[in-house]
Length: 410
Ligand code: ADP
Ligand code: ASP
Ligand code: MG
Image 1: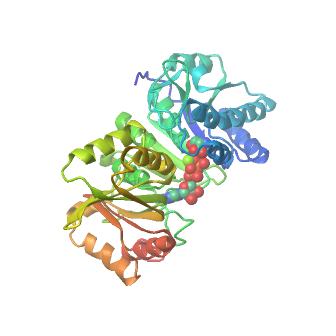
Image 2 (image 1 turned 45 degrees about the vertical axis):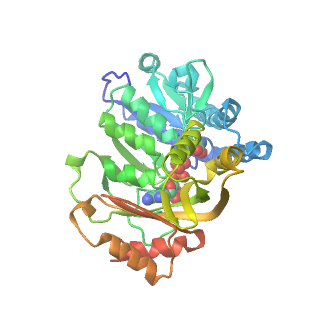
Image 3 (image 1 turned 135 degrees about the vertical axis):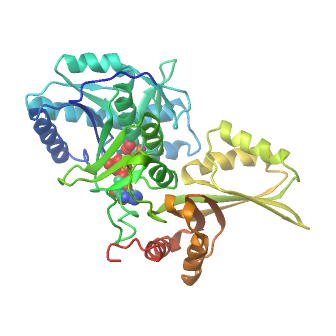
């Protein structure tokens, strides 16, 4: 991505859906921004759609065709941010500031053409700099971009975080502020694990793993971009004056606990295929077809006995309808397809795992004590993940959080 060193008083600040979820909250955000400008800051604002709005748009689309992901889907979903940046601009204007609300195509946030999961390729920093030089405050619609033939794209759910870090990278900033409805990144989602504790500092690799394993507090690609451009992410509450969490390069993080967080992904499905042809040709063909349609595949297992070869894999619920359609039309007459929808993924993450043995034992022992069965499993040197029944998710998260000494009273 192109980038240019900027003045240190320019700060990118992203406000999430709850932070702009009502007129009252938008007015609060505007008050906060006014205070920042009085202290000499020159903010670049990024906003998400008002909370609930993107979900509402997704369900309207699903009523027509749950498997459709194409240009009209992205155009629809991107509309939520147009509303919030306009309202925020009006609230700033009322306070005597000079806002300039910008959709992605107006600013020049260029992406590839993967509708519903597009990647940012470049940002027009000159345009942003000229707006700031004119004494104005850019308010950029998060989550959206434009492809090379001027079609509106979206960056995947939660993608406004990525817009913010991409803008910070484009202007050469060394940090980016993400304002949200929790005061920090916690050792587990505080809505699921009441004893979760705030984490003041996290390394990029830990946060990336947490984000990719379902912790929606930050979008995966935003952390990936931040790591690439060494931009520190400062996540904090919009409504409380607390320090929050810093996500920083490896060398700046002090501690390496064995497990730093328990992460979950509640919207998971498992597809089982039986009998599938022996060898790897079928697998290559299947996963090629799915990836060409932007279906994300997570854990894959394969086994065989005398009856034949079985394949099982997990995927996000949002991709399930598309996957079923592709598999049904391509192989429906050769293999039995079964789908399990009420699944969830539970994971533990920690860079300290690299130096300890027995982590997997403690993970499975804890699930076993809680009588929780596992469908699929995967591990890396900094995580262990398992697919379990969704109705056991809370029990699993609370149990593992305590097992690895993360409770705030431990
Ligand atoms: P925003 O609209 O501000 O982007 P999100 O809803 O996308 O906010 O993300 C914030 C939410 O992420 C929190 O309300 C919380 O429930 C959830 N969350 C999941 N895992 C964590 C975690 N480890 N720490 C903090 N919040 C988490
Ligand atoms: N509004 C989008 C969503 O709900 C993007 C975001 O909130 O970051 O997914
Ligand atoms: Mg979010």
